[in-house]
Image (cartoon, rainbow, N blue to C red):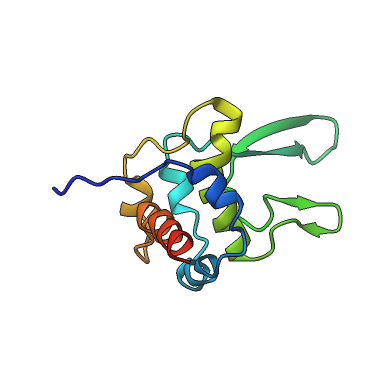
Length: 140
C-alpha cells in the first residue's frame, strides 16, 4: 500500500480561517451524512442522553447512547438544529478532528487509521479534502 501523508503545519488555523471555502459545498454535494465515518472512528465519542419512563410513569431511567455529529438532531437546541446542512456538519467534523481537537486535547483527533475513508459509501477522503483546501488556499 502507498504511504499517505497529511501536512498538518498551520492546518488548524487554515481550516478555521476558511469556513466558507467552496470545497465544503463540493464535499456536501457528495456526503450522505450517513455517519459511517464517526461510527468507525476510534476517537469519536459523541453521545446523547435519553430519558425513558415505564408505562406507569413510576420508573424513569436516563440512558447515554452513542450519537454522531452528522445527525441533524445532534446539534438541536430549543427552536432547531444549529447545523442544518450537510455542509455545516461535515465542516464541523473535519475542523474538529484536524483543528479544534488540538485546542481541547493537545493533539490531533485523527490517528490516521483510514476507517472513515474505508467506510464512506461515496469515497470521501479526509486526507484528500484537507489537502485540497490547503492547496487551494495557498495557491490563491
